[in-house]
Image 1 (cartoon, rainbow, N blue to C red):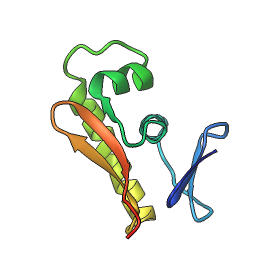
Image 2: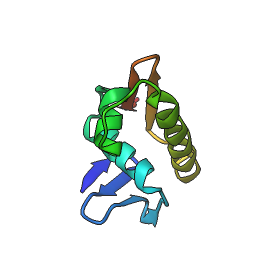
Image 3: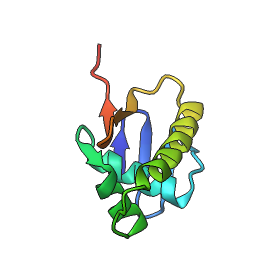
Image 4: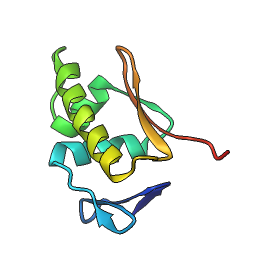
Length: 104
């Protein structure tokens, strides 16, 4: 299990929970979240995401496809956790980064 502030990810079961409530994700959304969470604090490039999630080599137009799935993922996470202590930050023309806000 990957335990993050506000989320629990169970790779063996392919499930994500917030306070024991399952967050329904598509296979691609789940794979993207798992990849970003496993690399929290580090920027994951579009190419890295495409290779790991789609299992193919990028051809140059994958950022829109990835962006579409990230948008849906953010919306589902926001609905489940409106005041989440984490964010999926866009790094313009590079990729995305899963960040956990510091405690205040």
